[in-house]
Image (cartoon, rainbow, N blue to C red):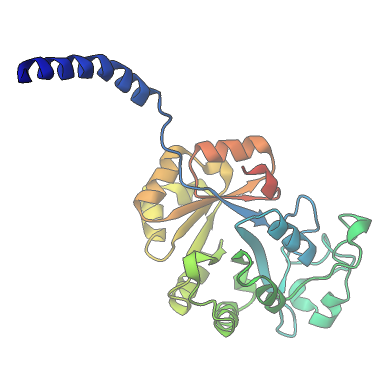
Amino acid sequence: MKKILGLVVGLSAALFLPSYQEAQAEKPPKPHQKTEIVAHRGASGYAPENTLAAFDLAVKMKADYIEIDVQRTKDGKLVIIHDNTVDRTTDGTGKVGSLTFDEIRALDAGSWKSEEFAGERVPTFDEVLKRYKGKIGILIELKSPELYPGIEEETADLLKAYHLDKPRNGKVIVQSFNFESMKKADQLLSRVPIGVLVNRSADTTDEAIEQFSAYAEYYNPSYGLVTEELVAKAHEEGMKVQSWTARSKETVQFLLQMKVDGIITDYPDYVK
């Protein structure tokens, strides 16, 4: 009786095995971990860059981070603006470092984008931290830190004042194109992830990536440099990859295929 029962079970297994194997083969591959959405200067495709309007919209669009650019005024105030001059994104003229905070604050930073945003102002770093702490991650770029000696210490002091020097889940990141500045930031903010911004092929070699990994947790290249091999190498060295700046759905799709960890984009809604 046991032999008969065993034969029946064996035949059933044999009949079931092919279909089971086929079902396994048809299963889609495991998806890559969630790709984080980084709103470049806020949702800057829709609202004036580096303004509260753009940052608020990024929050509404459920981005994971806002990316901001930090510079310093003549009288020592840290402000959020990308260019070294105010000419392009305000109705004023002059270098950020040559103007006082009151002079910069008086400028209209929204009308250039649309009359809908008339009256938007250049925000301070302090205002951004106060407004968005706990609501969204903040990717902080020190813009041209070589122009502002000591800006790393000032940035660290302000993050500490808001208890953001020990961020949860890496929701505060400090990055720059200036690698020496980031080495300094790493020493000042030992628990804050550091990112290196890369736009030269010379900084994509295995040797360069290994050197970056000594002090950086993020390797953030221009999307034109991104390959599967580059992403894999950064991952091997223990770094995440956030690539910039995606301004089309085609670029977003390409970066998703490259399995980057984050996409820095003017259009947060392009990343699904």
